Structures are given as structure tokens and as C-alpha cells.
Amino acid sequence: MTLSKQKHVEIWQRCLDYIQKSVPSKSFDTWFRPIVPIELTGKTLVIQVPSHFFYEWLEAHYLLLLKTSISQELGEGASLEYDIVVDNYAEKKQTMHYAPQVQVVAENTTYTTLGANQSPGKQVLNPYMLPGTKKEPIKSNLNPNYGFENYVEGDCNRLARSAGYAVAKNPGKTAFNPLLIYGGVGLGKTHLAQAIGIETKKHFPDKNVLFVSSEQFLSQYMQACKKDEKGQNKLNNFIHYYQMIDMLIVDDIQTWEQKTGIQQAFFQIFNFLHQNGKQIILTSDKAPIMMQGIEERLLSRFKWGLSADLQAPNMDTKISILQQKIRHDGIVIPKEVIEQLAFHVSSNIRELEGALISIIAQSSLNKKPITVELARQMIDRFVKNASKEVSIEYIIRVVCEYFKISIELIGSKTRKREVVQARHVVMHFAKKYTKHSLAQIGEKCGGRDHATVLHALRTVDNIQETDKEFRKHLENIEKNFLGLL
Ligand code: ADP
Ligand code: MG
Image (cartoon, rainbow, N blue to C red; front, side, top):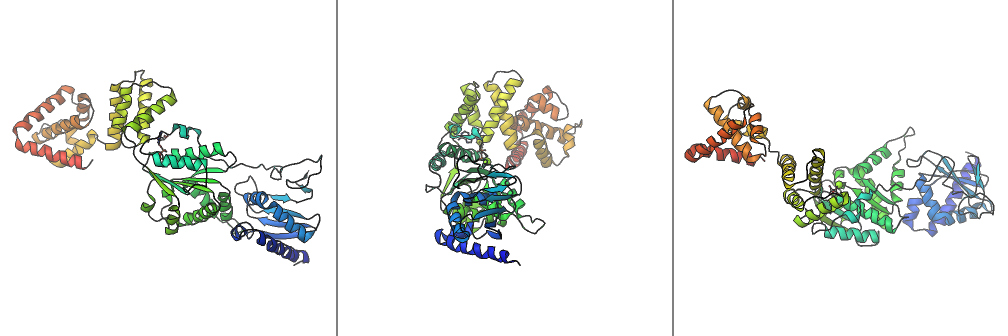
């Protein structure tokens, strides 16, 4: 080992001693302990930092401190050079040079750094703007269509919405930290979380807002866990990257159930952000206590803030949402159609929108006006088939199971009594539970025509009135069939 190699360690240690007295111990552990002194050449000390963001953070928060400490050790003309190990988030691996007070040469370009005393007339460049690199501002992943102005307020979302609004006006400073938004699929979690991010950016354009899906977060984490040829991983980079964020929004955290690795990494990030007054927003389709396999210590952190749930919207809210959508798209739709939709589509807002979109599409494809009749057809197709799966095939299966005959017989030419009876029963229930026309029902039952189906329906009605046993069969089948829905 050469003398200078030992010296750089000593010098850096003395700098650390000085720095340690001036910063809180948590910050010291986070930002100074991971730094590795590399070498000393003349009055230039090279230190290794784990990531580009780490470097930026040091520059932004500890410039003066670093400058003072290094100057104390090495005197006038001292300089500090950063070596950034590997950087996932910057464009390429490179060495970053930084010199307090003095001019440095990097990749054949002469410039002075920010924070240095610049002599007039010299070219001044931001030190991050090295040739071949540009400072990448954090991409927020916010979709402008998901603003608060498009988020209709209703009883179902009032608390969550106003908490979100408060957070956007005052990120990290309200009691709602973390803000946990939970609710069933399609009830507006993602939209609300996005709206908060967008609103925050309006009030605080300089804040780093990041919206990330739990899957993206997970895959970045997995990437960071991989070991490179030197047997090192980039976990620190990953964590430091996230620690730079002022508002971190993670969508659908229920996907982390049972995944301890990601939870640990998130725990670290969470603590750091929270301690530093940064805002955290999480969404989940389960209430926190219902999440299986989420570590207790993480769950208890969630309790620090506010859990606000989204409920299914009531009729009025559904109507307002639909009206809002059509106004937004500049379409005119009769009021009755809106009401039909709101009345029949109950499960969630995404389906409500889906039904609306298919009505609009149908009407423009077939050049039909949007009428209540068209709406009914679409609702039947959309709601019945999608959510309840009532199909003629399904009815055939249940009926055949009941009468213990094989399914193919329904469509066959057989006129055996028990087959004919089963066929009639299928037609009866198909009429009752599907919106198919008589012709369509006939088609599914072996290409029979509309008159045959009509005849079958009448026969079933007649027998039902007179034959108690037959009536019992129908009731049993109906029970089986509804019970399975
Ligand atoms: P989740 O994330 O809970 O599954 P989303 O946020 O994706 O649900 O919402 C589903 C759809 O419903 C989106 O297109 C969204 O814009 C819309 N939506 C949800 N809530 C509202 C609301 N209150 N006002 C207007 N549109 C809404
Ligand atoms: Mg969502």
C-alpha cells in the first residue's frame, strides 16, 4: 500500500469526524457512512458514492459542509472528486468531478462548478450537465386526465377525496401521512391517487412527485437485487433513488402480500421519507388489516396516517359521473339512457364507463341514435353476460345435469319424450334468463325456428299449470341454476 492510499482514508475519516458533529445522526448514517474514500492525488480526494442521486443529494444539501471539511484538511485549492459506482437511473456509468473553489477538468471540458466562486467571464455549467449526461428530472408518471376536476365527488368518496385534496395542498405536513386509499376494483383509487399527484405539482412544481405501480416498484427492486459480475447489487441505488422523492405514490400495494423482500426495502424507504417530512400515498384494494402476509411493522406504520376507503357510488353519484364523462367527450345522450345505465350497472365505475363506451361505439358504428332501447341491449349484453354469465350453454348444462341426459341431445333430432321435455325446459329458462330472441334460442337448440320455440314455451306453461310434478322439476332446476350463479 502506498502512502497516499493510506492517507486518503485518514483524511476522509477526519472529514467525517467534522461532518458528524454538524448533521443529525440519521442523516449522517444515510448520506456519509456509505461513502468510500478511494484515493488522494495531490489535493484531490476521490470519494465513491453509490448513485447519481446520492451525488446530487450531497451537492444539494451538504455542499458547504463538504467544502469546509475538505478545505480544513487539504488547505487552499483542495478538491473533491466523485466516483459514481454504478447508476441505474442516470444514463451511463461515469466519474463525476466536483471541486469546491477550483476549476476542474472533466472529459476535456473546462468549467466551474456551481457553488464555487466563479470568476467573471468563465463558462458556468451545472456540474450535473457533464458532456454525455443530462440531469434527468424525475418523471412523475402522472396522467393529466386523472385530475381532481374530473373526479366527481359523492358520498362514496368524500372523505378520501378531501383528505387527498388537503395532502396536495400541504404535502407531508398534514396528519394524513401516509394516506392509504383503499376500495374495491374500479372504484377510483388510481384516479384519486393520480389527482393528488397532479394537484401537488400545480402548487409545488419543484417537488419530486412520483407515481409508481407496485409492480413497477417490485420489478425495479428485483432488478436492483441482481448481482453484477463483481458480486455487488444495486440495492442502495434503488433505495437512494426513492429517498429523493418528495411525494411517493404507490398504487395497489396489495400485490406485495407475502413478498417480504420488497416489504423490507419499502419499509426502509418509508421510514426515511416519513422522518424527513415527505408525503407517502398508497392504494390497496384491501383494508390494511385484511392484507395477508404484510409485515406487522409495516402495517403499524400505515396506522400512522389515514386510511380512507372508497365505497361503491350511489345512483346520484353514478349519474354525475356519467354526465361528467359525456360532457368531457362532448357527446349528447338522453337523460333516460344515463339513468338506465346508472340503475343497471352497479358493480363499479369502470364497468359503468365500459357500458357507456360500448353504447357510444354501437351507436356510431351502426349509425343508430342513442336510445333507451339501445342502452337496454347494451346493458343486457354488458352487465348480464359479463357479471352473471347467464348463457344458453350454461342453462343447457344445468338442465341436462338435472335430467341426466347428455348435452348433445338438446341439439339433436331426437324426439324421445324425456329429451323433448328437457329441450323445452331449456327454451323456457333461456327466455326467462337471457335476452336472446326466440330465433336465437331456437338456433342454440339445434337450429329450430322461432315458431318451434314459441310452441315449446306455451307447452311448458300449460304443463306447469296442470302437472304438479313437472312444476317441482322446474323449481328444482331453477334453484340449481340460480344457486350456481
Ligand atoms: P381502481 O384503481 O380503484 O380500480 P380507477 O381509479 O382505475 O379504479 O377508476 C376506474 C375508472 O372509473 C377510471 O376511468 C376513473 O376515471 C373512473 N372513476 C372512478 N371514480 C371516479 C369519480 N369519482 N369520478 C369520475 N370518474 C371516476
Ligand atoms: Mg387502480
